[in-house]
Length: 340
Ligand code: DOR
Ligand code: ZN
Image 1 (cartoon, rainbow, N blue to C red):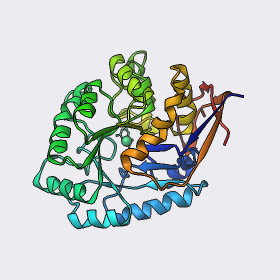
Image 2: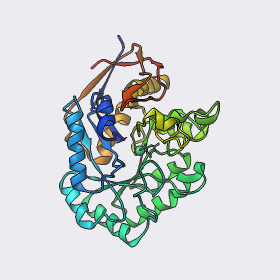
Image 3: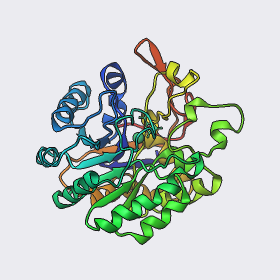
Image 4: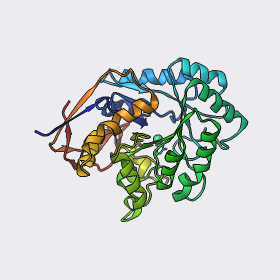
């Protein structure tokens, strides 16, 4: 039996939600990953250390896999103060998440203007403390150009704060790759969907709300160039699923929620993808080693995940809150199966 063992898989960008949905989905990640960076965009955003620690408790209480580590984040907003950042860092919260106001789900409390004296001061403190600044980088412009247009903000922060590590979350546009190569302190996370799908999967043959996410899936060239970065496990990229569950009724209404739910089958799908391109030898770096280097995660408990070359099935739906959550590629068959 062909076999792959992945050591300490890390999902560096994950939405777990709260309450019932959290309960229903947490173990998809907790059973496959050592740790995950948990996004703070809840309906009541995680804007303080108290809220982050309370949320961490809720996550751990609901995970059957008790060895899973949620890496908590703080939601950057106009009311975040310097002292709160220091308290967060002292409590082990080392990632600051920036959402431009209105860019995506629950971003109403994000920043309308980004380079204000207030945020610049916070970036300076974040840099001094050793925070990582994770950014949902999209302008308010035309959908397909939003990430590209945001590039100048990345440049400005990277130049002003050369010791602050900045992550371009869910990189979706090949024109952003240059930023990784030009600025020592700019890195990226890549999702499974942005390296395997394009805008045609959203609207090329009928409208597919389950393929709708922010940033929107882009062109074949974007997909191919980002896939290449992933397959070579470029040292400046790590895997971040951006798995973002929404109830089916909220995906199918006429204001479809943005988010692709992929956590139930990530490692099986990535194994198939890297095998298809004959790059399985790079999967360990992409799924763990790069992130350990970039985020300085050396003290994680060890976890070895075994996959066999045998069929597995993506669930057709997960029941939650008297509704369903529909995974990406629901019901499809994969060539790899997680056995441990
Ligand atoms: O598609 C997305 N969904 N992109 C995001 O940035 C947020 C996420 C969510 O929270 O649903
Ligand atoms: Zn996200």
